[in-house]
Length: 139
Image 1 (spheres, rainbow, N blue to C red):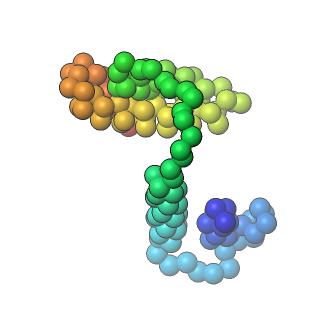
Image 2: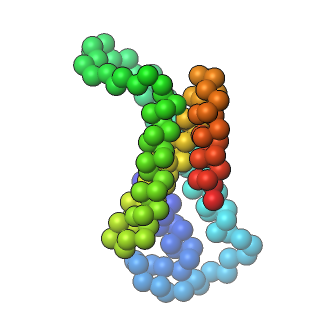
């Protein structure tokens, strides 16, 4: 079901069974932008549903593992600073290009969450580092 929106978009572009057949229907306006907006809402709805399901779960099982991090903002900044140049490096290597998108996304998310934790922990150095990293990820 998650692939149906991708197939609809490919059909709107004029593809049928992965071969270009042209678009027999005249599409007025910018339908592609509307399709992309619908796909973003579709993804946001599924993320909210999954988040609600996970938040509502209650596991009575004792947790066996615990990650010790003295500062969550330091941990997230480290992950973000590690993934950003690695993603850039992977984008220059042909076979590893597919991983660069994921690493850049991970760097962006970790930097944004590190910014929130730096504000919460009142760490000015981490705040500036996370803010700079956030802006750097937007470039």
